[in-house]
Image 1 (cartoon, rainbow, N blue to C red):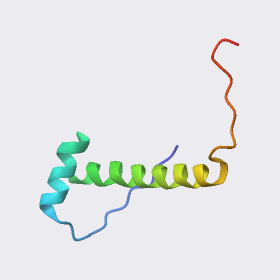
Image 2: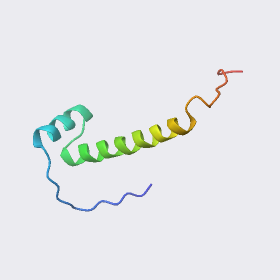
Image 3: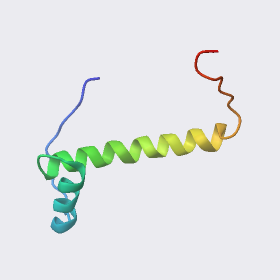
Image 4: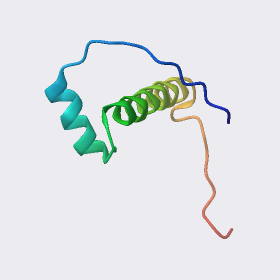
Length: 64
């Protein structure tokens, strides 16, 4: 997957950003923002899939 990175300027709560760096194991604030954005997008997609398919999927036991 090709990524596009562009310089931008946003206002951040620096304490929150620093806490995110620690919580996410990121190297810096920029990496923490990228990780957090990916997580939010993935969570939204998961919630949409669950709303659409929740309780409707059947799984067979492993090895059967």
